[in-house]
Image 1 (cartoon, rainbow, N blue to C red):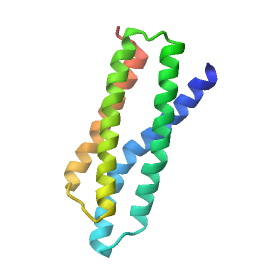
Image 2 (image 1 turned 45 degrees about the vertical axis):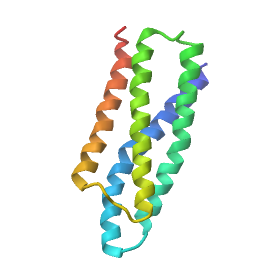
Image 3 (image 1 turned 60 degrees about the vertical axis):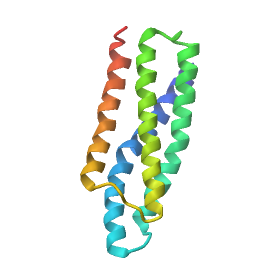
Image 4 (image 1 turned 30 degrees about the horizontal axis):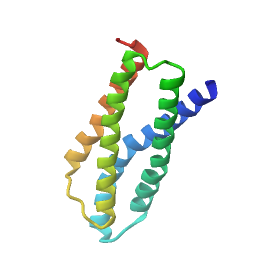
Length: 137
């Protein structure tokens, strides 16, 4: 079970990198698109980062559920953690929609919106860490 936990932590770390980086990368990609009028290196990097981290998200969720059902016995605090993770998944999917629109040159969101959107994920991760460490229930 320790190997599952190690894989879970590694996958979560990689997924979190993308959750924090992709909205910020969209800001710079938007500026690059305005300057070049075409798909440039930042767009390629953002797409690759998002796609790579999608696999890490799946691994993180699968190993997390394996741990929840097999090792922790699905303690009450896990309900809170899984609810917060579900919100983070929604945030990630929303980010993906923005990435795919940006690929077509559609940048609807302002820089300010993307910055705030980016910070929401930080608060969600803090809440998840609090639930894991404190185990309030």
